[in-house]
Image (tube, rainbow, N blue to C red; front, side, top):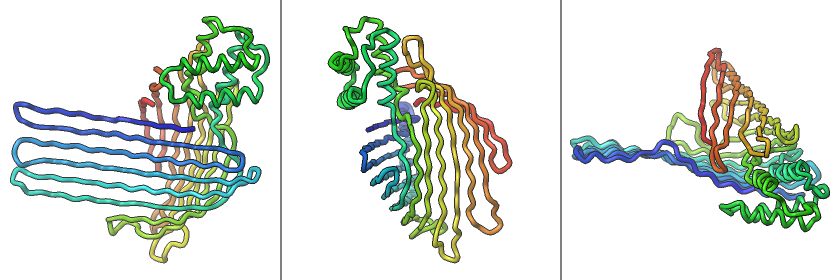
Length: 367
């Protein structure tokens, strides 16, 4: 897979002609992810950036400016022997904070803080967790043909692979037209579609090709244990700096059920600081999350949205004197509605127990 995401939070620009006052602020982010899975090797990398900035420029000498820029990237490579694999990872991140405050008398307070992290890790694992969204699309296509009595024979593995490669080659198209023409041609050539689809079947095939609920659909089990060596650069003397060694554990699970309309996923993590100097703590943290998602469709395959139920448990200790372990438990119920191919709405209710305090909340997202 290959994914590019752009997101914009609150942004505004204004100019008051009477007071000659300029105001500007913006909150934007973007990310890129690429992953390639082969039988003996898998590799992938991610990169993301987030910028928050603002300017207030009233008449006179006074001016306020500020910005925070966060950039990070990580990658990994795996080498398989059956279900067992060796893994190498690398991650880097940096954050820059800038503030400039000038009053009407020209007195200025300015500072820039920059911090960075870099870490590499090696280890091993078992299993593989794959995004099977394209394979589900093939199965949905077969069900649509079968329901319309247009399925001459089952879609075999070779035709399934050809369809998925065709869709991948056309992933950059703005329209679904070429994907529809190519899909019908592949099915006709394989003897699966015996005649040209009528208007009703064409509509259902288009719904399958445009279904945005078929992205990031995991299936399988994966667990790994790695040793990490990192270096932290912090401007604050009270923060941890220098080398940091960690033991890292990750696990993931995914299953697609009920004609691919029900998804069950879970993940767990644990990390422990190793070889800390005598005057520094050895914090640790562990957590697990589970989620069940029911995808909903109309009578003719229109993707409507999803209902999801999730729970998270996190436990940690900073290993400081007179400090207790911290436990956080969160439950969430969400409803999603897909407005079009590129956007949607999700409303979720949350309940959380954190260190003995109970919280209730609601969240509205536009994924």
